[in-house]
Image 1 (spheres, rainbow, N blue to C red):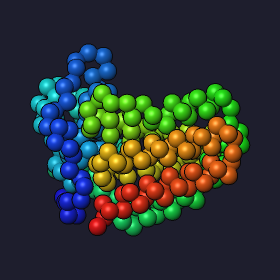
Image 2: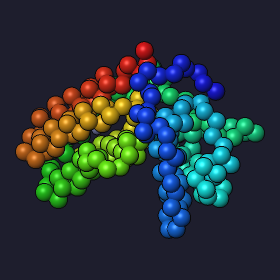
Image 3: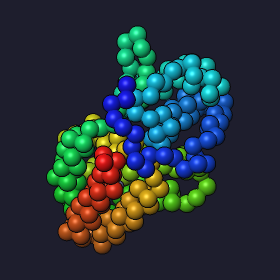
Image 4: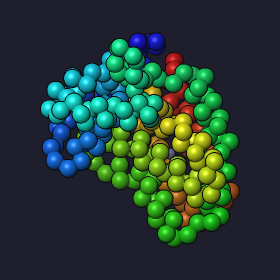
Length: 237
Ligand SMILES: [Zn+2]
């Protein structure tokens, strides 16, 4: 059930919108099916409220219904699809403007402080892991636009989760992880600008980590989260 008007700037680029991903049979089929449906949801090929049928996906990917059902169960646990009794699956509605505002308030309370703490305890090993998690690989071309976008959403989730983990407060980490923040915010708008600018900001955060500057890390994280919010706000206009 669509409860909102179509989002501005939600149109995928032409080449990303067309070709269905090809699912390779073999090991990791379940994971591949999951990733393919995840990418469709993130890039709004399956827009909020759209019906999703097990049969339709199984045919589209030329697989049996089992991996599709497994993938949809996992996506349901991540809040990206909703299962309705006797109706079946649909893409979850977008988060409301209210929820969006609350989410960013929560992040601004918790994440700059976590970044400061992480900077203060930074080691070469952790810095290396954070750099790998920060999504810089998404910048390299190659993968199709939609796959790259959903990959960045996942990397962004991992990067922010890791910063909070390094800061060492497990309850804050669980609280943020439970919101599946990144999946929902990246689904608001499908646009390459979202990832390009976010990557620049991740670089600034990593630079502060490299110099072990807690204040700079907190500031860079705050700027990143505020910019992320402002980039996505037009989705509600
Ligand atoms: Zn980020």
